[in-house]
Length: 467
Ligand code: ASP
Ligand code: MG
Image 1: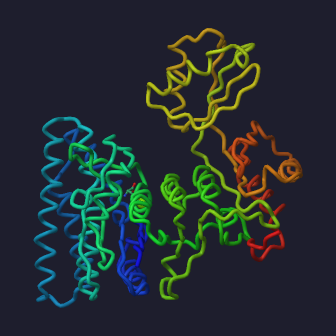
Image 2: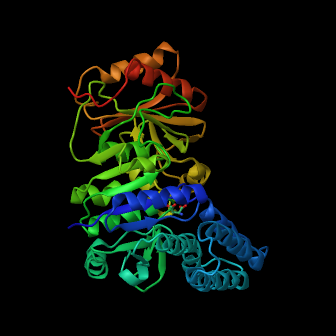
Image 3: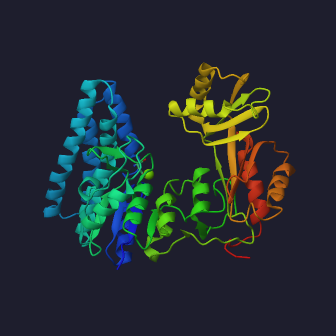
């Protein structure tokens, strides 16, 4: 018998209706599960706000925790209706203990007038800690034989980096296999692990998918099932394109490229541990949990070239362009290296680099553009005569196995865009075997996505026909 890991996200845990669907989904499996949960919808943002306000001395901590208590209480009472139920009393006691710890941490921040990283991570982890506790009591009430398992108790270890840690797989694997029985159901809060010295360390925003993936990899699970509130990956964002189709299968590489370039379905780090272990990821839709276990997209290692070649068109508005110009920047050695080191020292992550003889174009998170420009200015790197930034851009990516190896696909993409007279600013083709991306003015984003989608999908009903 092997482990089955499933993850429910914040959008599944929004209200009573969402919780009922989660209970249904858990029951459908009819087998022991390792359940990883995110914070309830919006909770992490509320905790960030609380910790920042506490540091500024502007937080009414008692009121904040009271609001959380009232909300959870309201919710649990809608589920466990019988007021004399012992579970309600136990839940109340455990819940208060956690809330008290949250309060203590926020109070410490108020006294310090700043947020030490270890307290920041500790505070944010309470979204998930309250969520796993609540789900544990709810599932118990519904007859699921389960227990809560906290990362600190089962040994989910990280490298210790605050806010954005990575899982220490070797160490974690040994501990998890000892701590978790294949015959029992566990509820584990996602989003954090424990540093080598025992502190809470977050796995990055949206990191519960990554927690679940790490746990699935360490346990060599049969699959990782991610329950979302959409029908898996689609051929484009249905908000801007009509006639989108489901993408039934993706490789790990295709799924990571789509996540990197803006698809919201999967955290970009989720595939990393699972690809190595060859464990499939199945994307489920919580709205259809009454229909049983039905994956909408399966991510695995099997490479398929569909008749369209392009499987999905993604976009992101989160990138900005830093343009370092100078005659010969492309040929003079050291300019890119010096710039990259300076940005890295400042904690700025370079997302992509495209160079020519006279310009080095660096793609970064838009919110870091001005900071990045100032850093390069201060370094005064010989050979750079001008530093420009462009924040009014969108990155469009076409993703699909065969895109680079098959002739004519890039031509079709660019002809489609050219038909609408849209100007492409920069193209990157060949860096990945399964993706090509280019930059357009943000105003042209929707039309570009639509044109490319129409080029490949008009008349399609299903995109998994293989050639
Ligand atoms: N609650 C965390 C966040 O909002 C982690 C997650 O949802 O995956 O970033
Ligand atoms: Mg989330």
